[in-house]
Length: 221
Ligand SMILES: Nc1ncnc2c1ncn2[C@@H]1O[C@H](COP(=O)(O)OP(=O)(O)OP(=O)(O)O)[C@@H](O)[C@H]1O
Image (tube, rainbow, N blue to C red):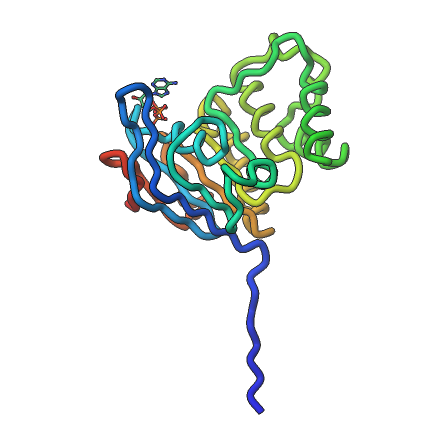
């Protein structure tokens, strides 16, 4: 008798974008038939204004578009809440209400993402932000704001992290910590889409694929 053993990779991810068209007024920024990724860490490179942020905003459900986006067969348009709960998006230039404290923001994220205080403490300690959490966000430096946004993005349990220019404004030590956290999460089956103008240090973070946006299409490098 033949015994078939099927290995199932935990947390397998499949993100598929089909028949995508995105325009601002008469300016078409993205227009392509299909782009897919499986589990992994991916780097989206490219010049200014090529559409990286727009692509990320589409995938994270932040901007209207024509086409279909599926994450493991869950439709962004038809099952929006389910889809969004599986994605964490950190903006290139995060903006939060300036009159709340870091702690108030993190508590909000923790409640929505059902995260424990212990997990949040681990993140704030890692990025050396614990001492500033009672201060109003309006008094934060751009690097502190960026670190707070990355902490927010790591709160909870999602399948895909989308980081738009995560390396800007943070110092080298924080960059190294971010690389290590990405590697740790990747080992737990999480996937990453990262845009960066700065080179991703191959000695510190191995990526599974590099893409650019050319002529409104996402193509592999
Ligand atoms: N809200 C908007 N309204 C009108 N045009 C926009 C808007 N957002 C982006 N664009 C335009 O869409 C194009 C792509 O912008 P996007 O921010 O996605 O590019 P990017 O690759 O992230 O650029 P950068 O590397 O400079 O951040 C640009 O020409 C930009 O001017």
